[in-house]
Image (cartoon, rainbow, N blue to C red; front, side, top):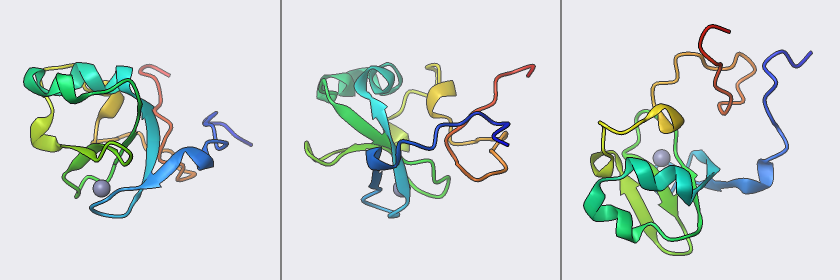
Length: 105
Ligand SMILES: [Zn+2]
């Protein structure tokens, strides 16, 4: 059974975090831009980024090709952080690490 409904077909879109070497999932720049601090948004290119969900790691987003790394201190905490929250309280029991359960579900 796949009760969590998470996609497991995105293995190709994973990279290792440059800092902790954890597997990091692909994320579109459109999701990155609104949450980084304003003076850093110009560094966000129209490209794909990867998101490190390791709570012990300082890296939040990174882009290998452009050599860009956004750390936790580069993130605007007042922004809508739900997309990139490091505190995933509803972690999938199957350990996919990528699925987030909707509220009230
Ligand atoms: Zn990391």
